[in-house]
View 1: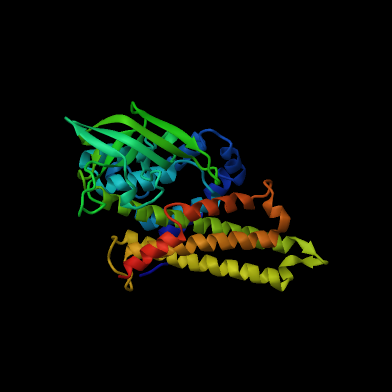
View 2: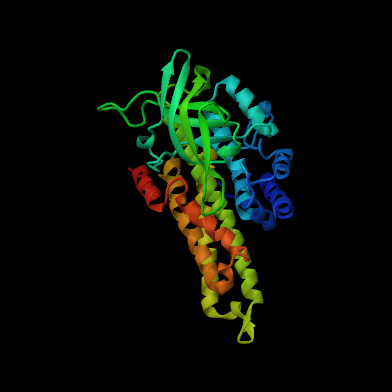
Length: 386
């Protein structure tokens, strides 16, 4: 396993850094926190023009045929710049799930739309139980003739307010005694403007766009099924692996930006006639931050490599599920510690709204919980070890 970046990936990383530093400064991030849509159509179209929405999709759909590892490089840079908008929901949650389980017709229509930037997607999974396990799926889909009628409520649906298509996990058969909790779950491709579908925005600590989505007798044709009826959970499981890894990569980029911001500050801020970076206590904070950052980089890129290399194969005794959960448990804690040390080095100014550090700290806190906290993933990592 080679965790180093290829020449092409290094070029992608450099070009992404240059583009995002110019077109997505933190001033824009601040503006979008107050904007109802949460992103600019101009930036979205620029990402499309660069080929980023098609990076991980085959050329036959208008993509560039890249791997998840190529996408990982991009997600890290987007995390560094706190890029707002529906890129993650559309590409990682939506598009890759269609690529994984869609019919030829679904792939042709949907992936072509994503690559061209004309279609935005998201995944509606979590319910009021707030779990990411199969037992939490209570939304139902009852077959009536050639249609399915969906009823239920989904929470924390990313960018649902702009999604043209929502992947919905629902039960098409009830849980029975002795049956697996993951059985009877089906995925549906539901248009965002469907009759009976309502979207209510939720307030979040990170100011990202998440919504409560209610389905009241939403009728969709049988052709909207993604994958097989009653066998949707394995698709969800793989989607969650990619989503968790993707958010870890965003955290890695954010943590790197926080360390860079802190190093610059401690070199310039003076106290007692010298830069505070010359004090041993501050140096220890910075060393701890750098250690957490490099540990995070290694553990998440191993997981990303395993996903790109085909999924469940073993690598040094740990399968991809275990690697992803280990990464989430470690990286979310590391990002928290890095932000905490950054605040210690910055002092009071780091807690003000005018300073950029708080933008990262709020997102670090939110991402700790996204797709399961550290304790949840430690348990999953333990299970993967047998």
